[in-house]
Image 1 (cartoon, rainbow, N blue to C red):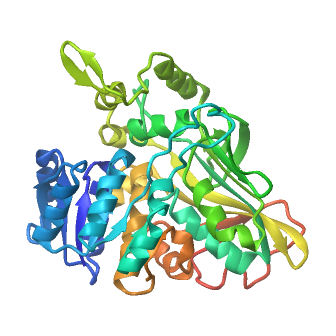
Image 2: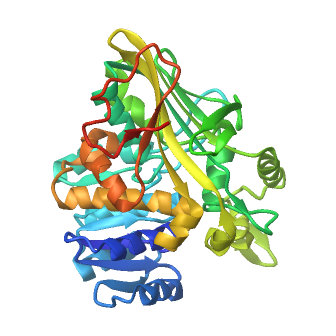
Length: 427
């Protein structure tokens, strides 16, 4: 497989590092494409494999430029590791270049103009899902949401529905951490541009009776007890793709409710609210000294780069799916999750935990596509494919999945987690 990797920031670089370390048989070469050519060259130099990792300059907002680069290297797949504002040019370029397309965050939403905190406007992914028939007609595949969330948790949803429950009723993504950075007043585990987008947009909830609806940012706070020593974390509603993806596939399997909550400290919420109050969350350009700039882009440039604080960061991050439903006519609840330790990720991959935990998932998905274990056409999410091949590979990539039985009438049987081994019952 010949891959055009668009974006070699933290996650893009980690994707390349993981592939280099694994040296899989399916991999032929990767174009390391970034607007900052020097950064792409630096990543290529660090990988030390000039024949298979080739740096190139790329404006991810220029569809024709993307198509030309894909044609130059005769790529089979475009892997989008850019911020989501570049999704549509990359998505359309992959279609025109007859490449498989993979991203980790879907096309951006647009709040309802009159009732942003009650009704949805343009939803995450709407622009991409609207083109599914065209992709099917051309026999091409666009795999949306291939990261950790969305991505890995969508696989958990499919596995739970197929093997752990007779009826799935509720999916609740819960993500939190106890990560800290020594000596830093403000630190980010991920792109601040994307963090602002997710946290300040109206969160979306899905219910069978109401469909998709929105709430105020940071609504419905709760404490969720995360495993492996992380402990209780305060979580709040945040806009995220899974809520827009999972009902499309699981509604006819008894699904009644889907939510996404993310662990946020009160001080971090206050900081985001201050950015919003000052208009620094805006993407529309303003004139500053005769130069037009986007306020959010300025924040993105001046905020600490997640890669710059990686070595000083310690702690763990957990991403998982809390599933409620019925098994043998009894209520059941499980939390299927993956925990990444920052120091272990730095040692094994050279990337911090949030980045590494995101990056290994699309690498596995590329492997499954290359080997024909996942196949098809159209615009879909990971939940459309069998979960077992993905889960079987997680431990081999250094990110094993686990499961805890929660407050349930049903008691786990011996065959619940025996199908693929690495997903084991945690203490």
